[in-house]
Image 1 (tube, rainbow, N blue to C red):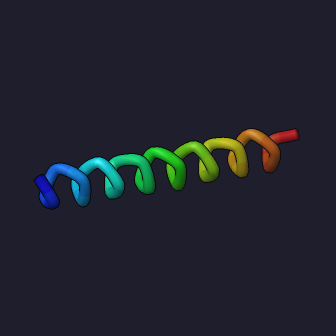
Image 2: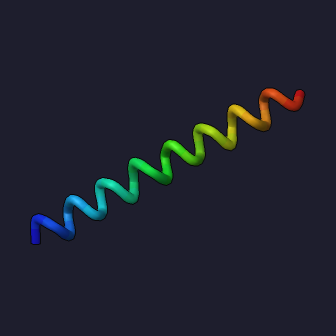
Length: 30
């Protein structure tokens, strides 16, 4: 069960980082 929680946390962290990078790229274009 702990491995599932760690995988979920890692997925959330990666998705948050990718979303932040996408926002930075969008802001850089404007």
